Length: 314
Image (tube, rainbow, N blue to C red):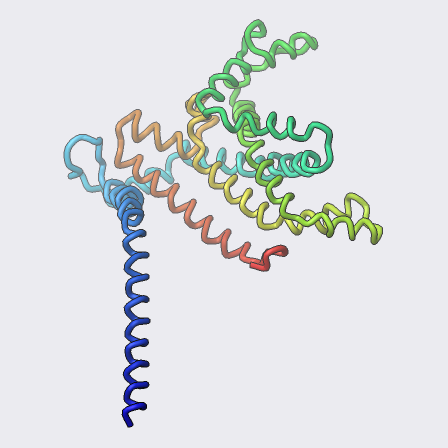
């Protein structure tokens, strides 16, 4: 009887000890997460709700918001042709990025990532533009796009070939493509580095086995390399789309959304009304629309691409 009681008491003590350890572990986790949680609530969640509040008012940024307009700012935004134009420009940048920039980065990553002589040099050269600040990049490309053939590099080449100079940043039909070339030059190396990292995780034995079985270079790429790079490509596409939606600095430095709103994006549109014209309530509504677009895209994209990775199985 005493032995069974002793065993029961010992089991009870061990059970209580496990509960205390679990509680202590949870308490430690909470204490470590608490500072980050406070910062997240203070600098992310609170500004979002505050922006939603101000978007309901015709607020100029001075004094309390008292001129309540409800959803009037949102109705005005979607009735503005300039905002619709900014959405079209963003979609065009996304299409060009997914159709040209990322495939070129992938192809070059495959070439540079293999036994190419001087591959370390090429990696550095292509990644170097990403290190430069967007302000420096914008100013540098403004000089290259100068309409004066004596000052602009590209127009000097055209004139030397007997062609007419092009007003790269002043022509409504050309400016958005000129800006895209600058964006490609700036972020090309970043996406290439992502693909290079993904290529390093692919076992070389798989490709060698395919070559032994008779697969040529194209079959190897499309049936082995490309599927195994699936998770890396998903990440690259995701970051490219979100970056295109939020693109601001380069465009504002180079064109300020001009000429005649030809290169306007949602971010430059928001900045123009919020911080240039001091219509902060209207600008807050634009920011909320951008936030919702990014969030909806993120949720749908994660749902559509939720497939197991070939290498990790996750």
